[in-house]
Image (cartoon, rainbow, N blue to C red; front, side, top):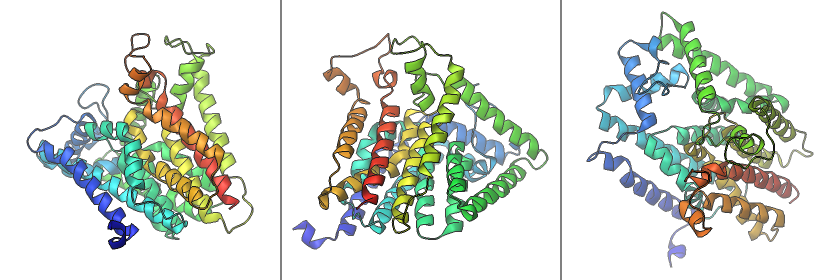
Length: 414
């Protein structure tokens, strides 16, 4: 009855509207009665207040604690400046609402891209993608982080370039890079693919926007502001790369290749080696992704899958990748689900893709404590967060990469 009255597009919009309403009730609307403490949002608001009060040269000084620093390009502090003019509860509501709008925008763009590829995703695909990332999403919204915005910019970049809107694509990519530097991973890919105009436009916007932001925030000392930014990034990398909560690729390698006290290591290698090993692995994957692909007819399909794979790599390749960072994977998860459904619909189910999907699903399930209790485990070497010890999210990222790569190859033959 419902399907006869509603088109799939209308159903998709209704599902997203219901999802947005549920999340709005769960998060920003509750802040009206109970002002929250959002750890990362407090850093953004402190940076915003410094900009508004003419103390921009202190932008990258510690904020709520010695370890909590603003880590984004100066221009993002300008965009966040209104947060410093609002009362704290109102600012928290506004910021969380921006994050929820970024989530909904990302899902809408994912649906648009998949339809252009001929996948016709089910109206519940976006909801399923959110449910798969529910554990990271709760951490994201509970701390007021910016990863949903980061992910939305990446899918916006892919969709804009797919539609031939190259300046818009360059703007989205530049904004993502200035927000979080691991998005720089896209630039060598563009260079290797000889997409010089897009790479050049992005580089130009980054330079101009970076300079404009520094001049707006600290007009008398823009150079020192850039030095402060680099120092904050270096300090963050040095401080957090090998913490238990870090779920990056280099942290995964450290867990199994160094003696970190959890007894899971196969080797006892120096940690300094792991940084170079991680960079080598990321470089090899980007180079392999950029290899020539015969036939121009499948280029739109390739561009979408390459963009999704690179999004996964920029997340797990970040030297400090937390639980919440994985919310930036909405686009790759959505595309993988839509492609699997499309393969099943045309009866070209790939057994390898199904196997990798099951492994990825197991990794996601094991981010929840109840799954570990069913296995009879409640702690390991004194640590109760077993999914952090066993690095389930990096394993999920690797499984997602393998799945997308497999689908990319499989669908190119369709």
